[in-house]
Amino acid sequence: MEEVYIFGHQNPDTDSILSSLILEGLEKTLGEYNVKAYRLGKINKETEYVLNYFGIKAPELLEEVKEGQPVMLVDHNGFDQSVKGIEKANIIRVVDHHNVAESFKTNGPLFYLAMPVGCTATILREMFKVSGIKMDKITAGLMLSCIISDTLLFNSPTCTDKDREVAAELAELAEVDINKYGLDMLKAGTDLSSFLPEELINIDSKTYVTNGIKYQVAQVNTASIPDVLKNKTEIENAMKKFMEENNTELFVFLITDIIENNSQVIVLGKQEIAEKAFNVKIEDNTAFLPGVVSRKKQVVPNIDKIING
Image (tube, rainbow, N blue to C red):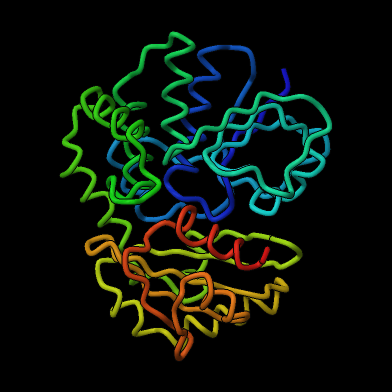
């Protein structure tokens, strides 16, 4: 039986990596497909913390897929955020909590499950229930970690009552204290000291194309925005290089304080779009965004609204 690849988006976050592993486990139990989870980039420190905590090995790196390769996508659907060659792959399943991207299309029917919740793993929990598969302790812990990560421990506006309900259930199954474990996990992801500027802007970075304008939104979590801004010039140089190499017209780099739930943004390129999107004045390429923590709900929709007029 041909192997089916499962993977999340490029520059993967915790939900992207762990949801790939969770879906792999579900599909292996169901037995319909011969599946294997992969990753499309480097494991970040938050995800590394979770994998070590539960004793799970990280998925192998996948750089390209061949024509006709059967794949399942989690935590994304846009081709501009996916693996090289995705346009010619055979997409048989998508499990996602984002809007359907302009770039997404398939040549045949597929199983597509999307829900307006804060995390892909929340949807996967429902798939386990519908399939009648009993949840084990480790899988519950992985799912819980995804929800904590994507909702910033329930502080993000993307968080729904469903996410909170599922998280409470999973914490009991995984036998962990949500607040203690969650804070330790998020703090593990704020250690940015070992990253070079070009690595920093790619820890969690996504490409978008709206109405012909290609832009990039990257985000890092920290407990101290000033510590990150100490290397502002170097970060800007890395952003400029990225834009030149990828024909990007706007780059928004979001530095999010997970303690205070605010963000500082560095913006290069079409800054007038960001100024209108966030109703701020960008000075020296930067601005403070009080209460902004979610790229999906507070950043990208605002930018798209301005671009689309």
